Every structure is written in structure tokens, then in C-alpha cells.
Amino acid sequence: MAGKKSPFASYIPVTGVSQRAQIVAFLVYARENCPNEFISYAEITQRIKGYPKAPNPKSLEVDSVRGAMSSVRETLMDHHGCGLESDPIYGVRATTDTGDLLKTQMVRVARRFKGQQAMFTRTADLIDPRKIPNTPEFKELKAWFNQSVQPVVKAISSTDFAAKLLPPKRDPEK
Image (cartoon, rainbow, N blue to C red):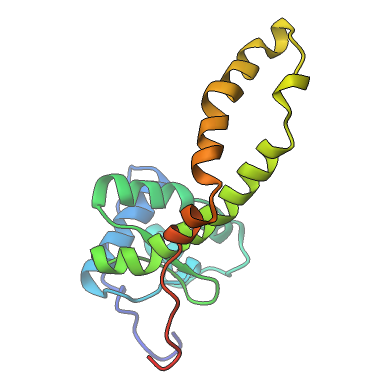
């Protein structure tokens, strides 16, 4: 942001709380004051620490902030009713409303789920319950596989199931 004052210059860092809570507080502030604006991890670090300048994007401090994002996402969802949208170039931002959450995080999660669903069913297909040893070591796992995993595999293995969870294809003209 050379030559241009950041819209977050007036942010007052929250102190005496965990780094995750500091990041969440800043992202909620950013969502309310500059909705839809992505913030780099370096600027997030600068704002939560109260630094006059953003640290080097490759610094350990910035890596620590970047590494906290999955727990930040959980906290935003659990306590603020929003998600976290990330972009590898521009950084992150808290989602602004239900539509934004649907358009960003839900679409991403649905696509990931399809891949996980495929891996789950492929792995289960490789397991022959008749060949699992009847030993104390495998007793609980075998029961779990037969009673819980196999019914789930049956329910989700249809191609229709996965297709229903994928978001609609985007019209390139829109």
C-alpha cells in the first residue's frame, strides 16, 4: 500500500488475548469497516501487533498468522456467524453475509467434500470385512466398519449423491 493510507490504520489492537482472538477481532473489524476487502497476512500481523509497518511477508510472525487461519475460520463460524475467504495472492477476509458465505466457503467445502467422498468410498472398497482378523485388536474396528462405515459408503457412493453437492456450473457469459 505504498503511498496510500490503509483503511485499517485507525484499528486499535486487542491485547491480553490469544493470537487467534486478535486475528478474529481484526477480521470482524475489517468486515464491518471495509467489507469484501482482502487483507494480506503481513498487514494482519501489523494491525494485531500494532506495528507502524507491515513485517516481511516471509517472516516467522507472518507465517504464524497464516498458520492460525483454520482455527480463525472455526472461531468466525462459531462466534460471529461468518466464514473466512482466502486468496493465495490477496490474503483473507471474513465473509460479509449468508450469500457471501454460500458463494465462497460453501462452494469450496462442497468441492472438497466430493474429493473426500471419493477417497472414503475407494478406501472402503479395498477392505474386505471377511478378511479382517477376528482378534481382540480388530474386534471394535471390524464392528465399526460393518455397522457404521459400510452403510455410509452405500449411501454416499452413488454418483447422484456427489453430483447433488456440487455447485452449479458458472455461465462464462455472466
